[in-house]
Image (cartoon, rainbow, N blue to C red; front, side, top):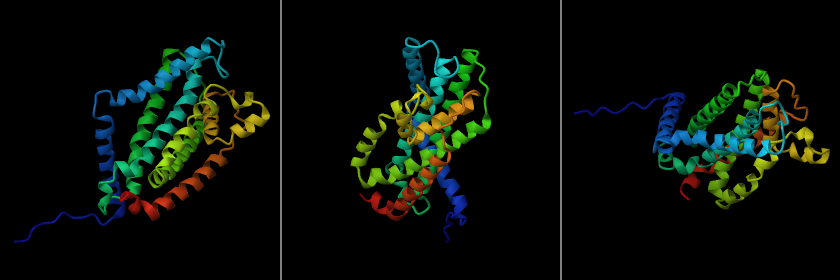
Length: 265
């Protein structure tokens, strides 16, 4: 009697697609599906942050540094930073989260990274879109959008997030203390990324240091797309892309050579 065996797809692309989709479904269940408020919390955090910034700075100034709407100005800074920090943390934990599944030959560490980025990127992107749209409708605000600049900013944000997330996926597992070091290093990002001010308003020496922060470049580029009167003259798009290429390539190389030994730690 012959027992039929399940056919294993020979095409690696198809196997990758199936593995990524399976990991995405698992991620949805474990991360957002455990409680009714799983996805709601993704919206509550940025809304609370924008509301707090709006309340504080309306007591200090009559108008924001750009435009006339405080919530819209702060949203264009806070939401990209939330995207970077949230997804970077998710990517860094990919090996630990999918450790059991990575023992199967059909699942690779790149599948785990892609699944986590796909789900969390789409979630954060939806939050970004809905919150900005909600502000525009609620305040009857009419921004002039420059889509070319917005898509360039999105490209910069995605590359920076993927690069640092991939590198941290290796470093968090290889050197556990790096997770604490990274937390300390990135805590000031809220203050030094230009969420509630513009680099043009800083002293020259301070601004030159400030713009080495890739998230400051990303946020300024986003505001260039959302404010037709803002030129973002100190943004150099090539810098975040080159930095991402170097850091991301090194992260992938380190993972490729060491991820199996990391799974046994």
